[in-house]
Image (cartoon, rainbow, N blue to C red; front, side, top):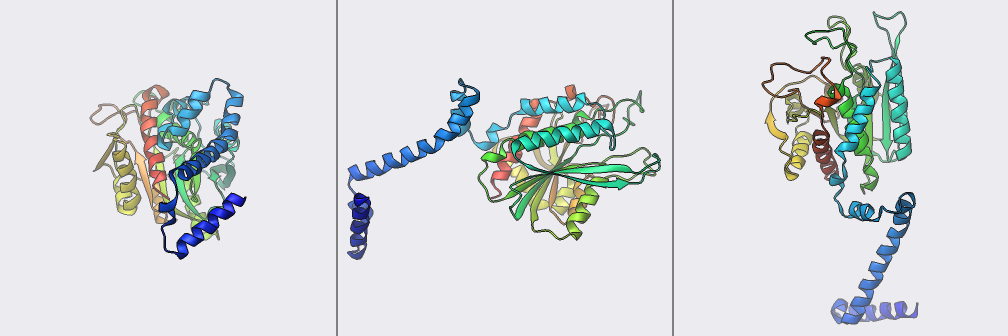
Length: 358
């Protein structure tokens, strides 16, 4: 204590005499200060290391690598792909079905273990095909729920009732590996790493239901869940706002090519260019900074009703440009058509972009 007081007095004297106090510090004293700060930093790591190594005594090397790796490089495409296959194993997950309920419960358990707040936004939808209204449930999970300024990450998690574009069996089984499960899996894996992101921003991940509850194209509406969410956001009192939104849809294609989506450029140019710029920094060639398709998707109600600038990351050329047969809305949309590498590319790009939003 006496040394600290003496140092303060000496510093005040230097300031009064207009002498640069840092210049008068001896090399020995500077070295002492440096050692003390290093010791404080190492001690701060001990609780983290102890907790990490308690589960696996052989994890020291992995733990140290995690500290040194940039946040975006911690995204694990293999983990995301494992979640994708787990979702496909539930089978078709149309709105109101038992597998959809299983999926909701699975996701709630996953995010509660991460310490995120989970909220079901449910409402009833009268539907001509059913005797009773169908329950539609958007699942909202929140990181740092006390934060006023937030980022919105979203996807749909329902699947088409039937693979109506399948050339052989248009009333067959549709598991929606790319069109449904890929977005969910990617956001789950991304969420695992946000605890290490030092920021005052909050993050909401929203899984939209009834994006494609289409039994008859002439009678049914698209984007039911996201439209409801957007109207609630626009009309209800709230103590937070979304700076930007990012929608991910069909991002697991093994032949990944993500072009600018034209509606995203028109309605949310800033965030669209930011995301592709992050991919450019990471040298992810799968992000192609040229417009290709104009797609109606869940980002439209977010932009037009909620007024949240939201871009759409979607690879609509599935499996690839020039293919004679598309897997979209067919029985062929299965896990083997997706890849961990594609999920890794999109996940890294999004984590890098998030870190630019300070």
